[in-house]
Structures are given as C-alpha cells and as structure tokens.
Image (cartoon, rainbow, N blue to C red; front, side, top):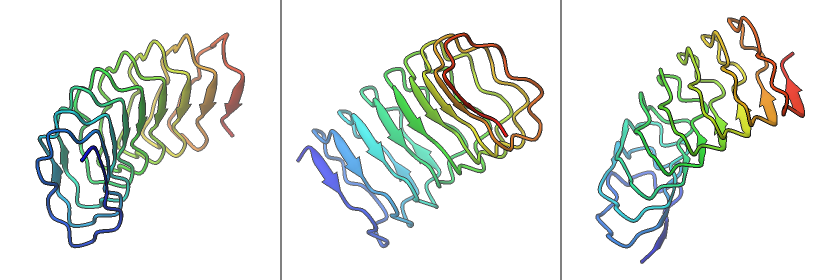
Length: 166
C-alpha cells in the first residue's frame, strides 16, 4: 500500500504504521491528533484535521497541506517544496526550509515573520495580522499579502510579477 485516501473518516484516531506509504490524504479526519512514523511519505494532505497538534519529521516529504489544523509548529522538513499551512491560527513560526518554492500561510494570525526562503516563488500571506515584515525573497514571482495590518513595508523584489496587497 503506497497511497492511502481516508478523507472525512471522522472517527479515525490513528494512522497505522505503513512502512511503504508515500501519499496520505486524511483531510477532515477531525479526531486525528498526531501523524507519526511514516518513513517513506512524500505527500501529506491533512487539511481540516482540526485536532491535529503534531506531525513527525518525515525525511522524504516534499508536499504538506496542513491548513485548518491545530499545529503550533511545522517540523524542519529539509526536502519540502510546497507548504500550505493556511488557517493554522496557533502557528507562531515557519522553519527555515531552503527548498520551499510555494508557501501559503494565510490567516496565520500569530505568525510574526516569514524566514528568508531563498528559492520561494509563490507566497500567500493574506490576513496575517501579526506579520510585521516580508524579507527580501530573491526568486519571488507571486505575492498576495492583503489585510496584513501590521506589515510595515514590502521589499523591492525585481522578479515580482504579481502583487496583491490592498
């Protein structure tokens, strides 16, 4: 079993140890509190798992969709290229993820800063009301930062092609 799709299994409390699992979609499994010990996982979609408080350090993970969860931190996932942590209202920081190209941290109301992510191409951070600054992101093409009420300035980024900050 390499792919497991258990969307909206509202009574599911645990994901079993499946050593060859590479893709897991457990979105809207509202009783799930943690996802641990899946060593080969490449893609994890746990969007809407409102009780999820912890995910493990998955060495092969490249895509993580953990929006609408109760995560307070994102583990340091060195191979991660896409991260959607939107609506994680308890999330205070995003780790330095050198390979990250897409980040959606919209509605993360406790997030105060975005780290310097050297290869980031797309950033959505609308309604991040505690965000004070956006660092110079040299490869950024798309930026959506509407309603970031504490944002003091947007750096000049020569590669930027699409900006939404009304």
